[in-house]
Length: 364
Image 1 (spheres, helix red, strand yellow):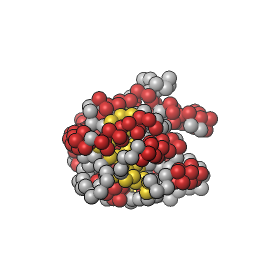
Image 2 (cartoon, rainbow, N blue to C red; image 1 turned 30 degrees about the vertical axis):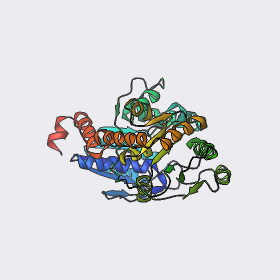
Image 3 (cartoon, rainbow, N blue to C red; image 1 turned 90 degrees about the horizontal axis):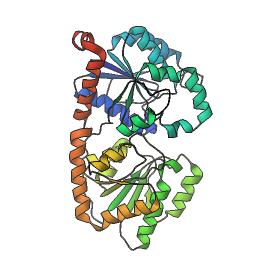
Image 4 (cartoon, rainbow, N blue to C red; image 1 turned 135 degrees about the horizontal axis):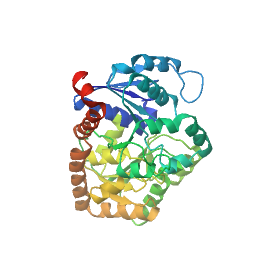
């Protein structure tokens, strides 16, 4: 089965979005499908079709538009990513013309919290095509909470939808000598909760707890980042932007991974990566995958407040046995539910039903 993913960019600067899309393609490959990507920029160890951007906003590209119209029929399924930009709308037009099933991965963009950000701009775009795009495709959500929140929109209550988690590849852990290492990988932006994490670390340091702390991620709010780095001087090492290999290495050498987001997120890839490495994870409940992981007993779920972040990290710093056992359970859960094989099988089951017997057996 040939599956085409259409997305503006899979460049590393896209962070979790590019990680999720490339990971999904690898999961499909592991399940015997043949995924390809159509985008403007980025590299992957997969077939990638790249196109020049146009001069207009919203990711316009006549080259991509025309190619999709000409080649949509070469695929059994098209998966569009990013609701608001033109590539998803090109994909919808091409899929409709070719009679190919269209899936739309919203990546949290239909969440009420996200819709409230730049509300007027998104409302205009909603009435200029995004509403029809969402209604005419099968929506893809990464968690049950993500689906429930997004489908609370009055115009999406009857939308077709499936839930498929973001996959994660295994990470081989290795301990380093010295005090326990706490890591946080997040953009330096107020929505990501890094200030709350740093404040919690400062409280733990004042109590006399010994640890090391490292942050990695791009600066998206310069003033916020400058104040944060000043407050955390001597306490946190800020590594800035790192590639995926370096991020995985950072997680592999940690004892505690913290994801302190204060704004809602549809998944939280760092949570899954920490679990795949067998590390104890402290996860904000604003990451919508956290509640189900908390119920399974494989992360410490918290509200992203200074006190709750400090309480969770304190517990793990003071109780090494709990830290190790939580990591062990997390790694087992990730292998069973979030691995390339598990997620690939989920996609295969969904798509073979969606495309019907003719596609599944006659055009694979």
